[in-house]
Amino acid sequence: MSKIKQRAARIRRHRRVRAKVEGSSSRPRLCVYRSLNHIYAQVVDDSQGHTLTSASTLDADVREEVIDKVKVAKAELVGSLLAKRALDKGISQVVFDRGGYKYHGRVKAFAEAARRGGLKF
Image 1: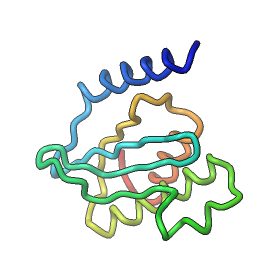
Image 2: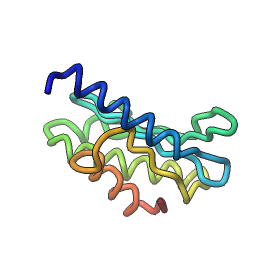
Image 3: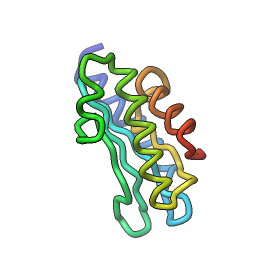
Image 4: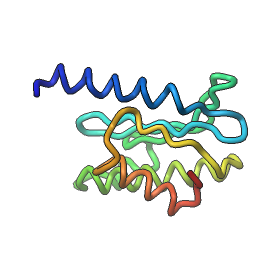
């Protein structure tokens, strides 16, 4: 499958997921985006259209820690960082939006680390 078809398939999956998943004030949406080298995540309140907190491998808090680590380990660090930041803001329950990515590899490692960090979804 070519890269263009893979991207189109991910976008179709993402639209299907977003039709069912919506964040609210009580349970905001935890959305994940993974690029070739980095992983980004944010907690979004869709009713107001605001990002409540975010984390990525480019954040200053984990920038030095992610050097010379495999991508799955980077995703785990970002998941635990996002969980810590969300709990500091009083967010304990979220709805997980995997962004059209299959639930394995980096996305799974991120989600499990966020659960270990205290988020419920």
